[in-house]
Length: 562
Image 1 (tube, helix red, strand yellow):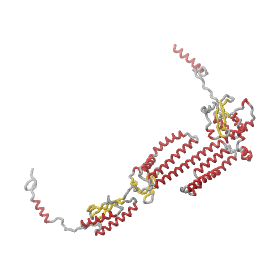
Image 2 (cartoon, helix red, strand yellow):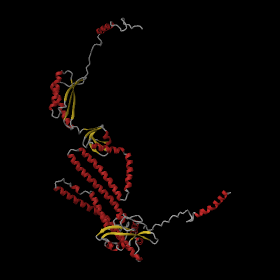
Image 3 (cartoon, helix red, strand yellow):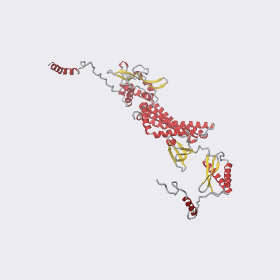
Image 4 (cartoon, one colour):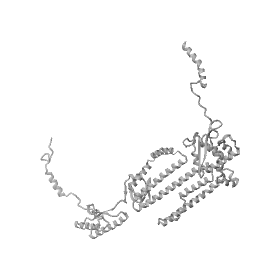
């Protein structure tokens, strides 16, 4: 009964509990979630968006909207609508000509702004160019709007200085003198006259930079002539190099900034210019490293240090790859890419590439080991495995041989490092070894005489090493008596050795003719004998002699019985 009453009471209280959970203040002490304030419709929640919103509105010639980014006048002093719109137009012109693009990127995107810039709270500065009167800056303040929301506005203190700065702009009077079709209309937020000026300035900047490059090369040419240095070829004075590209890009950028082109356009233009500067810088560094490497190689070649020359060539290529990676990372950082994430991705990608390109790294390390061990140099005659030729190039991945058939064989450096390598350049002398076959009808005294004559031929030749030379009677072969002539010829060049070998062979042949000996020719003798190989008389005697011999088991020649 008690349990039944409890169940009825619980059923009666359940609706009340569910209703009470929906009434604020009657729940279990939990407060309802706070309502977030709606975002500002003009995007004035942080300093960066305030400035960019003003620029976009002013470039679209929507000056009434652009004026809403201004701080209201103090004391609610009313300003005319036309006056505020003119002020917005003037401020845009000042920003286009006095504010650098990277200053926009430095503005904070945090609603509270930067708190560590040394400025009072709720204050931000957009810095511009430095002039004699000081650095031009646009101040932003964080204020409350009509709905008590915090927004960022361009301060009235800054706006009061804009008319005077606008009157000092160089192109304000020029625009007034140009036709209306070139100033009133807009093409991608810029008047047509600025686009024409930018396009015309491109060839002018290139010509100016080219002229400056030619003048500097002529000065260097005259200086080298007077100092008796190697003369610069005339055709090299007029080429377009990385310096020309670098200088022309900088001149064009200064001109674009000088004419007051749109700051938004200059942001995109700065990215393109940054890429151009990166290409010119890498081009300049690659040419400088090649020039320096060529000078070092020239000195090493003149001193005969061929291994170091190959190492310099390999080091130059590795250095160019490292410079390219550094320039690429710097360019990505300048374009706003997170380089840390890119490096992490490169690390993971490098690990995957390393696992998939083991042979490539094996060849790279093999090439370095071949050069550091000085096993091969460019120009060496060698044999690598079953390939023979002259080394034409030792690269990062492979070694190229010019064979005797005038073909080029490419061998991976990993194979070169592990193969049996024979370098003919490093030999100090070449072996001369011949086997002379003489006829069997020579007497021993005749052979001694011939041996002494051949030994005298070797001693009289100044290119033959005396300590290791020998002439010996070697063996009695099947159809000739063999004499070995063994000597080292003190030359390194194989072509020169062939000439000396020819001279020695002719001298040996003259010695053979002088002594009356003769070279044996391969021959085969046939002997004609009697039909029966066994002599009958000797066979009969052997048989009778064998019958008289007693057997081991008894006197009768029979085996003993068991």
